[in-house]
Image 1 (cartoon, rainbow, N blue to C red):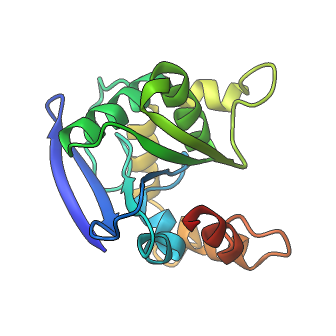
Image 2 (cartoon, rainbow, N blue to C red):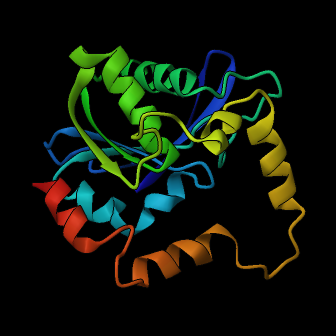
Length: 186
């Protein structure tokens, strides 16, 4: 697994990559609103055995830029994913989206059907007749930047996302399971 940094539309973008030499299909893992590319670490290496896996940090998350005037809409994120794929020389990919990332992946599939091989959604937002107020609010300009700033102010030792992810994986109904990873690797 390798961490890469590139620039798209004048902003830094970071992503994790596994399985470049696997000979398998390109799979893009899109994290949720409170996550980043490392949210996929429990499955990244395993999927990389059979697929070329890319796990980007969406704008405003992880090691990607968080410009105060950035486009944090699901369509903006979907367009950047397309542009990342093109920058890396990939015409199409299978997308896996978790939570807010599911909304981004669905928008990608809608905007760029010719670039979408498959679409897998995990506890995805935006599946009902209306988008929840929380997901709508999350796309407002500056919200991701503000959330990132607030999370940095959290006291040391507070549970945070990594602990929540570990708890979710260990729950009776895991969010990320090895069975799911095996299914995606087929």
